[in-house]
Image (cartoon, rainbow, N blue to C red; front, side, top):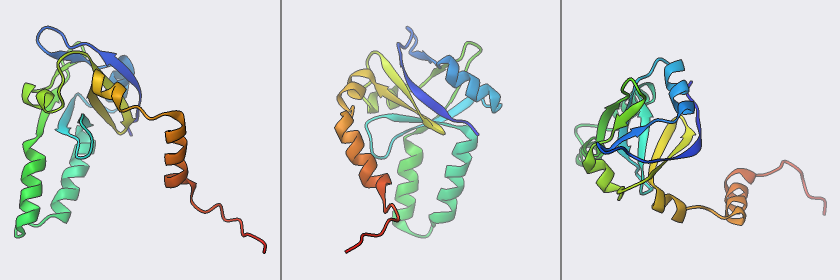
Length: 156
């Protein structure tokens, strides 16, 4: 299973290609992967790079949950596939994201590649820096989402 962690600032070359960080390249080659599916994130102003194996899981989920006989399902499916493209790593570990997708997330200079488990997020560097959580916000969010019930009972 591929696990991407860490964040890396990258500058696209003159042709718009981005070099995949060596840690991410190792994960991809270790899993026998050489391409991603890239799509606009549903909730954030970034792109998500999904290795082919993980993408196939998403496609299977879509096919199992959505019906071609319901209009809302068809609209969602169309919208998801519309903002999607396949990108291949070249021999130097570079990839080229279609310009239309880069424009969707306002990339016009440096990007940040952020490992988020089984996927990589691609952010405009400026947007990434603006979106950072403070230590206090991170703690509050972790407590709210992960704190749960400790299992200890209160004594009256």
